[in-house]
Length: 242
Image 1 (spheres, helix red, strand yellow):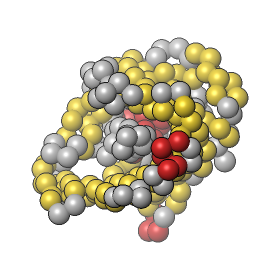
Image 2: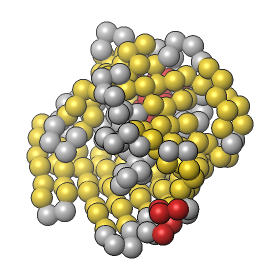
Image 3: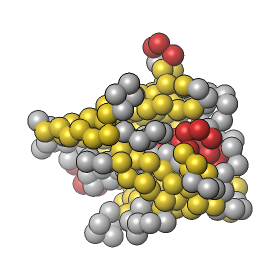
């Protein structure tokens, strides 16, 4: 998922445990249970909206992991800013297999839609942005940036600690993104309450994602994203996931 993508949204993708083994093969044996979690969204400390992260069943045994953010205060409310991201995947051989990703941003002045499709039979990824599209080879275990959040949650819950490498589908290539998972939990207080959570941070980029996961919850209790201008977007859990 992304936090707000313009300017508020964006998140990440798959893992190799310890000796850089591809994340998808280490995923838990049981498929994850559906959930829905509510968040408040802040920009540099000021509330600008609400977000919902959810995992749900879809048709044909597929799943949908979505992140919907709506502006409700400040400029985001004035612009009528809504951002939605959704990832379709199947649980295949006890692991996640990404099938597709869609991003849509709607405001009073413009609308943006992007998508990523995974063709595992031909190992091809297709990224569409407006009228343009890009094709490139898929790496086993690759996921989109939205689904990466769920993958990190699954691996924290399964006991993964230390450095992990996530193959993430970018606009023109698969990016091997490095993340550091804390070896011990820390106390994190959010509107939903106090949690003992493991910090996860992008370690190969200054403006990468930071997230805090409190197993067995798959929904992060807090997520932080910095853009290229130093603006900080924060999601904090408002209500315990259902």
